[in-house]
Each structure stands twice: as C-alpha cells, then as structure tokens.
Image (cartoon, rainbow, N blue to C red; front, side, top):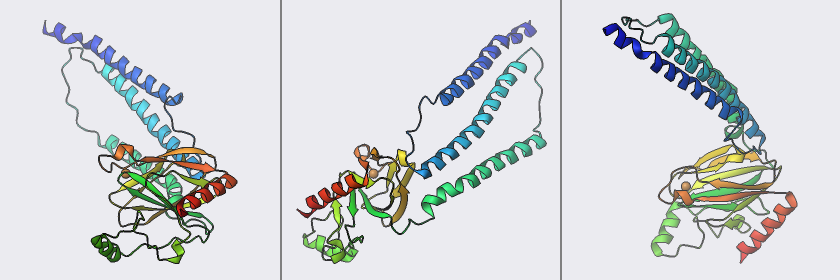
Length: 286
Ligand SMILES: [Cu+2]
C-alpha cells in the first residue's frame, strides 16, 4: 500500500521536466529572433562591446541550455519509483572541474573584453578631438562648448563662489564659472535642460562633472555609460558614425526627479553642426 502511494510521482516529474524543456525552448527562441534587442551601435567601440556581449551570451547560453536540460533529465530519471532514498556525498573531482571551468570562462571573457573597455577609459582622446563639458545637476543636463579658441574658461574657486553666494550676488552662470577669465569669453553655455549636438565622424571628448549627487551619462547607441561624480572631472571619448537624434537619460537614481532627467544628443553633418553651434553662440551672447 505504501509502495503504491509513493510510486505516483511520474506524472509530476514528466510535467516538471517538460516545463523545463519548454522554458529552454522559449528562452532560446527569444534570443535567436532578437525579440527585444539593443538599438544599432553608432561607434566602433560599440561594435566591440556588442561582440563581447555576443561572446558572453553564446557561452553562458550554452551553459544555460545544457544545465536546464540536464536538470529536466534528472527530474525525470530520478523521480520517485517508491525506491528508498539514497544519501550521496559530494564529488570532489566534479567540484574541482566545474569551479575551474567557471574560473577559465570568467577570466577568459574578462581578458577578451579588456581592450574594448580600455579604449574608452585608459587611452586619452586624440589631440584634435572636439571638447564638450557635460554637467549633471538634479534633474537636468547642461553643456559647455569652448568656442573657437578651444579652451574652456575656468571655474571660480570654491572659496570665491562661497563668498559670492554669502553676499547673495551669485552670477547668472549655472555652474560658478569665472566670467572674468578671457578663455571663457567664447565659451558657449547651454543651460540646464538643453539639448546638445556633436559632429558626425569626428572624435568627441566629454568632460563630465556633477553639481550635486552622482548622475550617469548614458547613450544606448554609443554603448557608453559614465557616472558624473561630484568633485571629479571624468573624461570619455568616442566617434559617432551615424547622424540622428539619440536619447540621453540619466542612468543613476539621483533623487525624486530622476525619471525626468534626460535630453537628446543630435549627431549632425559637419556643416549642420557648424550652423547649429553658431546659432547657440548667438543665443548665448544675448
Ligand atoms: Cu541624474
């Protein structure tokens, strides 16, 4: 009687095994048809990132499929036949084997990815790169172009800015720029909430700052995401190879208004960009 009661797990085991197989099939299908996928990359660096993503996806995908199918097999094969349960000790050989395999996989993927990452973070921009300053503040992005002289005007010292604020005569500048610095005369400041533009096929170097908390500059199509950290000046560089309009959200939860912190980056042909920048300069001069 007891034998009969516990021998009834075949149906459950079959259903569970089939569910696991179904899970594998649906998951693989979604990735193969690319049901939800990234927008096309517009930088060479982005293609490297995509290659690295695909390598990682293929390797971990194979591990996923094999382990889930093995699980489905084990669920069915070792189902309850009414047999007595057996105690199994660990298997040292297997444990060493799959720990080593995991180690090789992760270190290997890391080594393959290092040049893609270093491209943006360790190598400086080429000398002729177009410089733009990006400032994050709750909950807007601002931008500054150095103008024809290619040099950004300096900031006021912290003491000076503090003293002016205490006197209540803070200048109109959104970020405590020193308006007396001649290098800042030609600077083009696009205040909080502005859109910004860059020329296509030209290297751009962004200098990221934050006025308050940590924000994160993120453009999916560039495959680039970099935090803007208070007190730090962080530089990143890239070359966009396709004109268009791309969203720039803040990718760091930076406060209650975080959801509304975004703008757009326009990638323009050189002539359009020159015209755009001249318009901004004219507007900024007023
Ligand atoms: Cu933010």
